Length: 541
Ligand code: G1P
Ligand code: ZN
Image 1 (cartoon, rainbow, N blue to C red):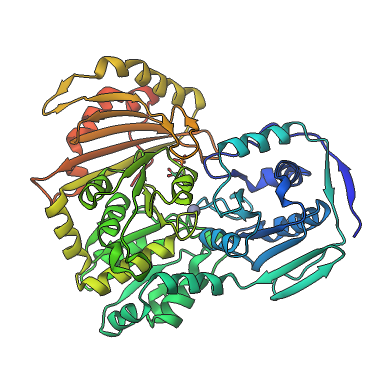
Image 2: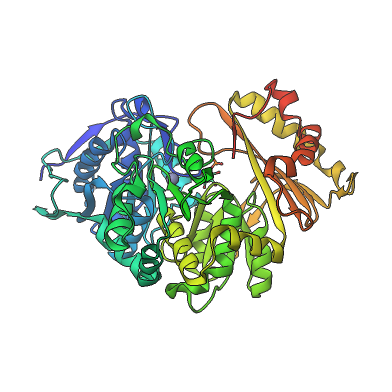
């Protein structure tokens, strides 16, 4: 071992956002940039010394280089063992599982999620703590603070490991174990779901289509859906992970997974269509001719999860992020379990999961997961749906219709205004916030404002407070308009407008027409188009 101490100066922009430090590859490629941020982590997270660290990423451009640097720096900073995914690949949920399974003190998850990849795309680093969840607010603040006063980093360039072969490489006081991340993850899924029932369901002629969008879940889907469950190989598409994700935007939604959507809207659509994102934590679910919104998917899974072996004992509780529609709240009420409303970002679910207060949780942004790991999990959601379909004998449309008939339907849409100037975004937020108090009690046609505030959250487990988590205008149980600023963009500012309308009378409308009146009201109250000069949102999901 030959540890070098390299002098460096701080960068001012290494503040991790909702999902880690996410920047253009070009920024990460600046000399010392990656090294500084890694050193800030090693300096803050002292329990890493003498213990185990997991490293893996979604396979995007710069993954391999970043892993080589991280290994050399881990060795120099006194970490005793690093577990790396074969080929540098670990989906985000698989990384979370590996941290838990191996009792690691933390993990580096190298991903910018669904953001485009390649030399002109984005890269990112998330630090996950022991237990498998993302670093919380306090720790990320500390990492940022330490990045601002960094003066040296430690590296041992003699560490050289072939990450394309499973096995253990031992150095003086340091070792690297390369593992096939698929094995452990597949075993976990097998414990949670009834693989026999799913196999029989597929064998009976039910077909699926899974689109890995050329990102990290391809090999996982092949192993589990094709090899273990017997789906046709041709039904798992875009399954080879590429460094630039094939030039696409691996975000499983109606815009970026268009090919899958078209397939599912066609005459001979299979029984279930699904896609996952760059790092495998998001999911989109479709039935023949029907898109299941993430908020509905959360609610429907909550209502049926007891059909899966890993959840036979029922649910302890449910949680959703604030902007996510309130469909899950109704299921939780019927089940007699609590439903928590948290700020946006998966890390807010982790305390509730650790404390055993919830079993399932989700976000409107195509994230669903459970107590099995501490990240959202795309393939988990797909397998949960397959298990529920196989066990209930219902089709996706039958299940959805029955659900809406029982609970009512929460029509939901999100409008994203991207790449706004920071000033323009703040101007919209500030103007709305200033007007909120005067809105309470006002009536707009059939809707009356019962609450209008900037959402704040007190964590029931550790008592920590999160302020200013999004502006919401609530019309009782009937509807909500929510506006918040994205924490994951890498360019300018993104504003997200969320529209939710609960209907019990009409269950068969298409969401844009069901929400047309609320959209008009939102423009009247928020003035997004008026204040930004835009003609409409960039993305509607
Ligand atoms: C977005 C989603 C949020 C999710 C995060 C990470 O964050 O809205 O639900 O947890 O990505 O995947 P945002 O850009 O809105 O801050
Ligand atoms: Zn992701």
